Amino acid sequence: MKQKILIVTNKLSPDAGADELDVLEQAEMVGNACIRLGYDVARMEMGLDLQTAISQIRQEQPEIIFNLVESLDNQGEFAFIATSVFNSLGIPCSGSGVTPMFISSNKLLAKQELIRLGLPAPKGYLIHETDLLDPAGRYILKPIWEEGSLNLDESSVFSGSEKRMKEIITKKSPRHYFIEEYIEGREFNISILAGPEGPEVLPLAEMQFLDFPADKPRIMGFRSKWDEESFEYSHTIRTFTAGEQDRRLHLRLIELCEACWNGFGLRGYARIDFRVSSDGIPYIIDINANPCLAKSGGFAAALTQAEYSFTEAIRRILDDAMGSGQ
Image (cartoon, rainbow, N blue to C red; front, side):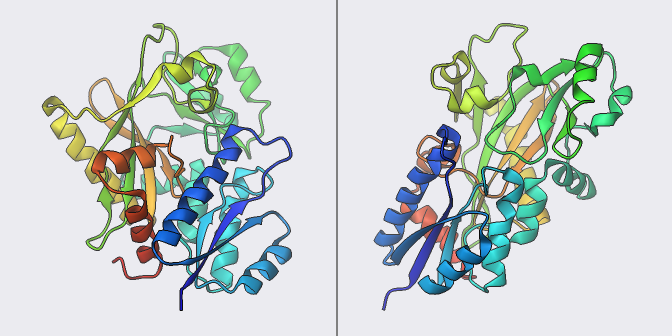
């Protein structure tokens, strides 16, 4: 008899944009891979009505859940709740558990954990700490909870001497925004996949910002990821060109990815984002315990570069969830 897998996605908003809609593509891809792996596949959406969700899951009686819940009610700070529900029901689910999901979803908590683990991260400041900013430094205003670069664009980058920006910042919610030191330099988005020998760091992807004006911040903002008509989208490309001159840097990035995986207790798959300063020092800027699996995303691109099929990746993620991948 086939094992039953339940693919759970977040319920879409009535006016869902591209950043929400891509979960449908992910669910289709994962579902097809699970069928190829011999599973009996069912799907359901999950919203903030948790009692209804729990009833539906119990009715489906799956042996395992593939968790594609990226938010609830389009709020990133609720994403970990889905993992909590699955955990309370005692059903194995893909990806990381409740604690790493919660900590990594909150960028301030993640930064504190990186510091505790002795891993390099840009300095962070609370909204009311603008008086601590170096007038000669550059900073970026970031949402604490949201993924997919929601509410993040070039206007988020500012100088420590900009009084007007500081006035704007102090009016933001301290529960939803914080300030981070802006690292001028290169950006790497690196995917990790569970395997029988432990986590495997996939080929290192560098994001390159082509023909950006000198004064335009080079960041992976919302337009770079989702607005196909924008300059940022068409001029930001992913490359896997690992030159010999970067060998030492790449070894360090791999080492840091493994340290994040083990330190945060990540499982299944993950993505770690870095900025590398002009003097070659890497800083961890994001831990994504539930990265996008869509064809256009970095994880799928890294799988292709590593010559792994999507089905093989899903098998390894599910093996790790069931406890047989370690």
